[in-house]
Amino acid sequence: MPMMLNALLTTEQMYKADALTIASGIAGYDLMENAGVAVYRAITERWQPRPCVVLCGPGNNGGDGFVVARVLAAAGWPVRLALLGDLASLSGDAAVAAKAWTGDIEPLSTKLLEAGPLVIDALFGAGLSRPLSGVVSEIISSINQQDLDCVAIDVPSGVDGNSGQLLGSAPRCRLTVSFFRAKPAHYLMPARDYLGALVIADIGIAAAVLDQIGPTTFVNDPVFWAAAFPQPDTAAHKFQRGHLLVAGGEEMTGAARLAARAGRRVGAGLVTIAASPETWPIYAADSPGHMVKETATVEAYEKLLGDERITALVIGPGFGRDQRTRQWVLSALASKKPIVLDADGLSAFAGDPGQLLDRLHGDCVLTPHEGEFARLFDGAGSKLEKARTAAIRTGACILLKGPDTVIAEPSGRAFINRTGTAYLATAGSGDVLAGLIGGLLAQGMAPFEAASAACWMHGIAAERFGPGLIAEDIPEIIPNITKTIIKMSSAKG
Image (tube, rainbow, N blue to C red; front, side, top):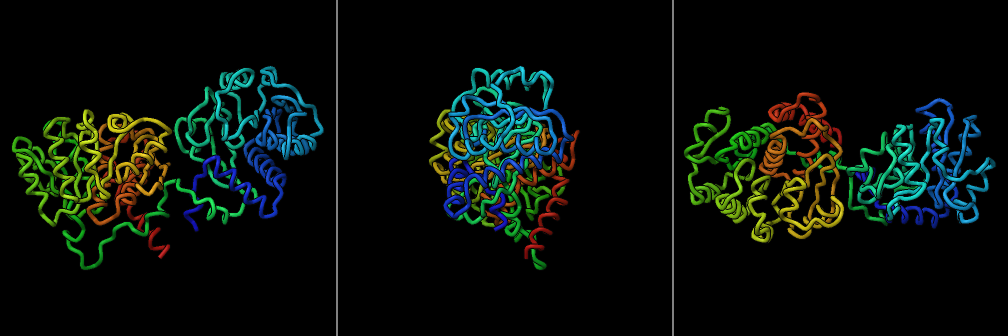
C-alpha cells in the first residue's frame, strides 16, 4: 500500500524487520553488504574521490562501515579505517565484514581528522541508549568544530533513533543514509537538524514484513487523507459546506479574525465570530464575508451553540486566560460539536487541567505548543510519546506544535509533519492553523484527518511563500494548495 511507504519504524521494529527477512531465507550478511553498497552509492553521487575516514563501532553499524570502506577503496578512493574496540570482539555479520577488509585498522583518534577528510560515521546506529563519552565524544566535537563533511549510517552517532534526542552530542552531517524505512528520529527535533540530506535505501527487505510489524507512526502525507478532503457537489449551498463558529476575544481581536479567514479559505460555507458588544464593531468592520454575532454572556454563547446549522467550533485564539474562558470552553464541550481548542482555550485550565481533560470527547482537536502542553499534561517521554499518550488519555486528537509537529489520535496512530519552514515562527500563524482545522471539521472531515490535512497545508503554504511570510498571507495561499489536494484525490479515484 502506498501509505506504508510513509511508515516510520522504531529501532525495535527495524530489528524485527531484519529478523523477519533473515527468517525468510535472506542472509543477514547480504543485508549488510547491500547497506554498505547503498551508502557507497549515496556518497559517490555527491562527492568526487577524496581522502576519507571510516569510523567503525563494535556492532552491525560498524559492520556496515567495513563494507563501505572496502567498496570505496576498490573504487580508488583513499580510505583509512578506525575501529572502536578490539577486532577480536566483533561477532556475527560485523566480524565477517571486517574479515573482508584487507586494509589497515587504526585506533580511534582525533588525529584521523587532521587532514580534513570526508568522515563516514559508522560508530553507533539508532539503538544507542547511553551518552557518548571518551574518544568518541572528542572525535564528534572535532568533526563539528572543523565543520567536516560527514556521512552518517542509519543516524548520526549520539542520536536516539526513537525520540530524536541527543545523547550528549552528535556530528552535524551532510548526508544520512538509512535503510528500508525511516525512523522517528529522522523527522523529530533536534536530530533532524543533524542529518543533512536523508536517503532511505532499499537493501532487500520486503515491504510485506510491515504487515507483521504493524507500524503506528507515519510521515504526514496526503495519501492518508486526500480522498476524505471535502469537496462541494454541484447542488451544494453554503450551509451544506459547514458553518464554523469562532469565539472572538476582547483584546487580541486579530487572532479570531485570522482563524475565521482561514476557515473560510479552506472551504467552510459560513463563518461566524461570537463577539462581545464592545468588540462587535472591530469584528464587523474586518471582513464583509464574516458574520458577527453579539454574544455578551456565556448564556448567549450557549444559545448560539444550540443552532443546529453550526457544525464546528474554534475557541481559544486571543480569548484570554480567565474564568470567562473556562466557562465558554466547558459550554462548547458540552455541546458535543466538533471543536478546536487552541492557545488560551487550553492555558486557562493550567491550574486545574482535569476540569478540561475529563470533559474532552472524540470530536475534539487540541493544538498546544510545548509550553501549553506542559500546563496540561505530564511531560515524560519523547514528543511523539507525549502526544500519543495524551491522545489515548483524553480520547481526543492532539496536535503538538513545533517544527516537528506531531498529530496523534486515541487509537495510538500518530503522524509527524515534515512540511513548513522557520518563517512560520510569526505571530498569528497558530491562529490560522486552528482556523484551517476548524474549517475542515465544519465540512465533516474527521478530527485526525482534519488536523493532519490542515497541518500539512499550513506548512506547504509557508514553503511556497518563503521569506517575509506573515500570518495574513497563509489563508490566501490555501486555495491553490486545495487545488493540488483535489487533483491528488481525483487522480487516485
